Length: 485
Image (cartoon, rainbow, N blue to C red; front, side, top):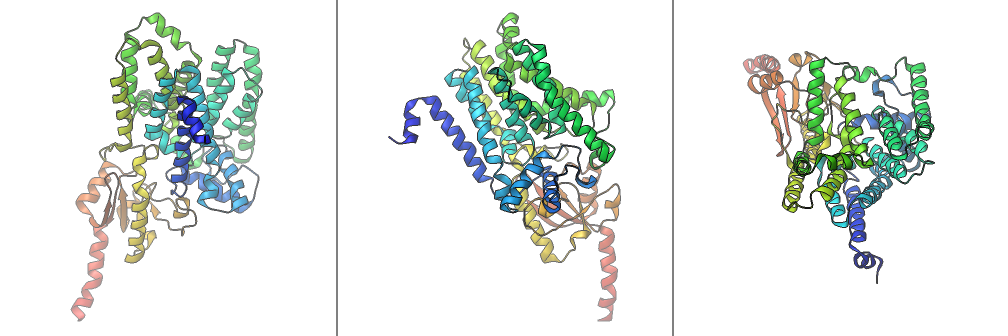
């Protein structure tokens, strides 16, 4: 009997576990040569800097410093030094992380769920477009998810030795990860009922964050108020904070997840309040609720655009929590049709398309994938047409240097629209893949500018517009030649 047949015949849970890990392995292989997208460009800018300077200093130049500890880029740069610059050497570090996420997720699910509910939890994980889009990206949110699940696993097994190490690594990935310290400290204290023990464990990551802040401030004069993203770190008004609160809720529930939580609410209201409180005291639910509360309070206060991927940990933990609540309180209902409907609606999130007037979290959905082929086709057109790339103005992410999208590519870069300079721009590259264009600009381009070239997929459009001022200028230049002849 082969090893694979052993897993298939031993029991169903082992078969599920093996299949889940093969799914994650296949996802990694499929994304091995996928171009990079959105905020990953900043990771690559840091990577190039570490690789070119061969430095061990974590103080990077202001033009690529977004205020986060650059441990993730530094780690990947070590693989570049070992294997050279390639998509493989960049993504190889993700393979053990993805498999680790798979093992931890299924083990946590098995601790709290019966066999059939483990299957449901895995299916929701595999069908969620935000989860899938992050697992094929190079964002720090993926190792943050891995380390978060690992810390939780250590907490619920009452093993303290690794937690400080894992938490220090976690806090060096992103400023957002700093706010997981009070989340896990709260979970640890409630689960272990020993405040002194919790204090000692989480003292070390707190010291690590403090040392990083002092270190960074000494060289830069600031800690998180990065000039590169200064407009995203401003405090907002009370009204804007309430708006951010609504956006946080939607980003957590977006892409079909809302229906699963609607089903969960239906299940909860059919049970006595005492039973709801009892299940809410479970450490898994405490992790989910604490995490959502801390992230929401953080994002409410600042002008930073709120992305779906920022809620990756509660999204993933939420699926196990939902199955746990339904398992414990929904047995008297015919829940299967509702779960199937929820799963299909979550799967439909992979195909959602918003009107151009509504911002889309492109980096948190697989609908961004056609962007890469469209951009390559557009660059081929620009090369053949002879239009200088510097005369084409556009917004993020189209203005990202090509080498930060495809490793080894030529350093093509379009000009960046700033304030009102677009009015005098010879050409504008518009795409709905950018959330930076205003409604006024879209109307101006479509009504008064000349469409030169268009590329479209079902989800993403690329349109090159030419400024009418330059069209008139071209005609005046051509007129003497016509008269002369």
